Image (cartoon, rainbow, N blue to C red; front, side, top):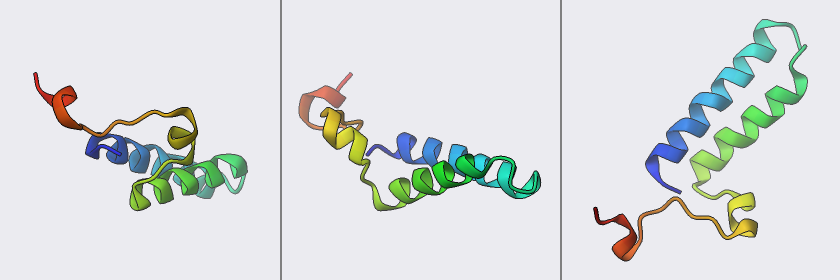
Length: 65
């Protein structure tokens, strides 16, 4: 997982968790999605990316401009 991908996941996850906590549980599913996004950023592995065969990492010649 690329650094920019992890940063975006943490930001979106934190926003979803904050909304749930701020609005007294209205965004309950958003809370769990936010937790999953932040955990996948911390671990550096996204199971959905693995299943789909997607990678945001720079490897070999694909990173060169």
